[in-house]
Length: 309
Ligand SMILES: NCc1[nH]cc(CCC(=O)O)c1CC(=O)O
Image (tube, rainbow, N blue to C red; front, side, top):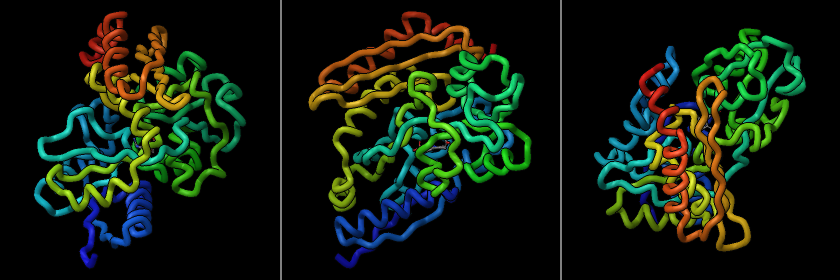
């Protein structure tokens, strides 16, 4: 095939790495060459406020989806973590790729672990999910909001604006920064974000050519796990802007285990649900667990946060 696949991507270093990674895999599996088109999203432009204050869902994907719909590009590579539960009409998130390590990491220059940070140390993160879970372990820490891409955050650490950072391990590994990771956090301490570590491919539903190219990168176990997690996202109508977490793994073949949490910002309330069910019902399992969390007090917690109290 002589056709060139047009891939739409954000311009951050991590997004570019991910898009190039997908382009290389596509060339290897289908022999098709790609060209990257960089698209600026609202999430990239608003850097002075936490995304939880900006509001709205899909701040990192909206403009890319518009480019797909207008046929400016044919394929979008997303961090599944940034993709909202609802897809626009005409587009599908047809392929989930094999997951990188989903855990969060602690990065510090002077301190060996989260638990060994001195009392009152400054911890940089803007994620409500990280803040609320970390407060249960270290309520004494001063949380400093840090936005921007991974490089910007690491610079703030190097400049001493913070004593440590919490980041996704997957992003650090992809950027070749694994050597800067001080500690891999336990999933039981910091349950990952929905979809963390997984890449998803989005394209026009009617585009059978792109669909057949993309489908070679489909990873079944990751698809099942992320479907379960995204079921929770659907139920809670949240995004990366709410203190919710969910992590699923495919156990023996045919079964998926899912844990989901809703936390209050202070960390004083944390609701956890864990289930195992058949893989074919992964999404339903997630939807059901999300509903259970809402009924057990999650609705109250999330309403408080949405109303800014
Ligand atoms: N919100 C930004 C974002 N989206 C995806 C990743 C990491 C890579 C991934 O989860 O696949 C990151 C950076 C971070 O949270 O440290």
